[in-house]
Image (cartoon, rainbow, N blue to C red):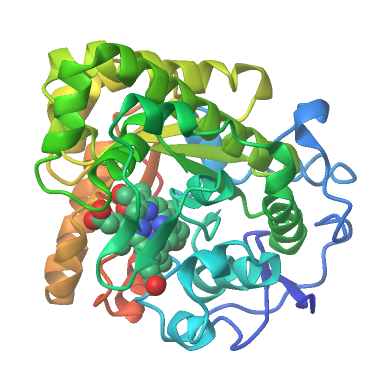
Length: 400
Ligand code: 1CP
């Protein structure tokens, strides 16, 4: 791939300069040793120093996102956006043209470019790997496609004992593209952290069983309540997928990991505790030795926050339905929070957006740490200029 040149911002953040230079930023001197060369990314799994890519300059401050994720209060409030890479960006639409989504996810050079796009454009405090939660299913050989305007669709949904038994374990050899993409990205990003992610067992199971997006998750719940033995077998396998996918990213240099249990909010708390929490716990426990901060997020999970906080992640992502102040009392002390501006508010006039951003920052100020984000993904119609403006505003506010 063509490596891009690098600038170091006034805050010491290293950014790639491929394409348009970032506005409102002056080019500082190249910082010696600010990033390992491509292919020389530290193996943080063994080195146990996930936050310090710059070993030649130990005085360099920890990136704000990592500080907040570790429960500290950095000088600047960190901000990134779920689904920051993708259809809200014209450069994304241009670059993706003619390449199927799941093909793009397995092309390390394209993954690198698409992951960097929102970092270069918005100046966010983290990159999130360009991938999708169904990519491990593809690697496992399951016939899944991402259909434009729909989402993941499976040709043969998993509904019987035979279907579950036929699911293979994930073969690490199939994840070479992921290792390559993450190493390239870490080298390109310099001090900006890369967030690796995976879909949680329940949310993956929902796609496998329903065969595509679903509103009520009726088939998933029917199998969960009606066939607990099968459910256990299925979720155990999917916990293995998530665990391996996350470990691979951390081993290649991702410095934060997020587990998306997007559709867990479909469940009552009692069912979540019995049928979902044990498997999410298993995923997090398998990462305990890595010393990489973990984020756990789901949509519509207000009633589940206390239980989700027991799964093992340090940071709890809060969707836009629950004010951060209330969320803190539900998850208990000691957990940094991530969130939670309503993504739809970005379509309002700027004064409305500004007031809402300030309110989220204010409410997050009492948490153990706060990573500013939306309460779910960026909507495709969002004006990217507004996202950049939100980043500038968050960075301009006095850190609480
Ligand atoms: O052609 C396209 O552009 C397809 C749109 C798209 C993109 C850009 C999909 C289809 N997935 C993605 C990338 C993606 N997916 C990322 C990386 C980009 C980034 O965040 O910057 C991430 C983190 C995901 C994760 C993901 N995929 C989740 C969990 C997060 C969430 O939003 O809750 C889920 C549930 C999916 C499934 C999925 N993939 C794509 C769609 C439209 C959906 C949701 C479909 C549904 O409603 O069930």
